[in-house]
Image 1: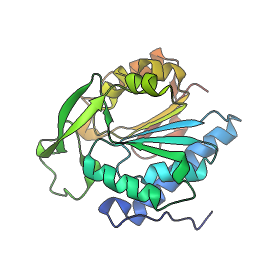
Image 2: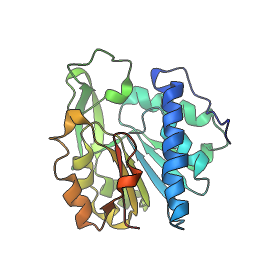
Image 3: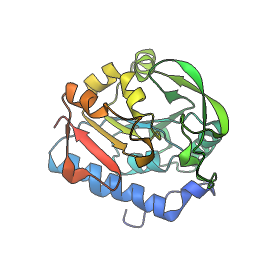
Image 4: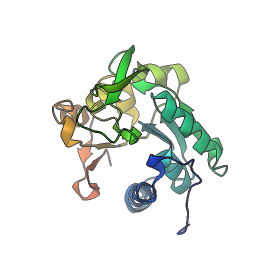
Length: 222
């Protein structure tokens, strides 16, 4: 497994340093935490803001007993996500993609790039708070999706460029079920994620400081 490399369509977000980062986070971070704490409770993983699938494929590879649900609202990203899942047959049956985003209510929202960024080939920058090259995307609440599919997460990963708090506001029942959550603290969106720590504490989560990986923080009920 040490020489593992996913088969990905040519894309800016398929750069080897992003693959290496995903592998480091999942294999040496999250999976190690689960093993060290003797917990085997990450059977259902939500990858919210899945982009083109690098993290989803990494989760499915290194947490082989888990089912990964990958949510991506941007249509072009979703197209690459589906292709990349198909290109990795060893994990294809354990990743299910959905062309939808999560929010605090159901609505269609414009989503675009930050006005101060020119690297618009970096499709991980898409944000509800971005106003450059906007496109429309469908958003629903996490709880409504869970109820409709009768699926609730054990492990939640969010990379949503400032939408994290709104996502959790719409996922109260999902948070009751979840045991672990990781999200990015993006310095460009500190105002938008105010209050997220209070939401997690109210649901029994505590931050695990030693699990902080660059800008990604990790909370757990363990």
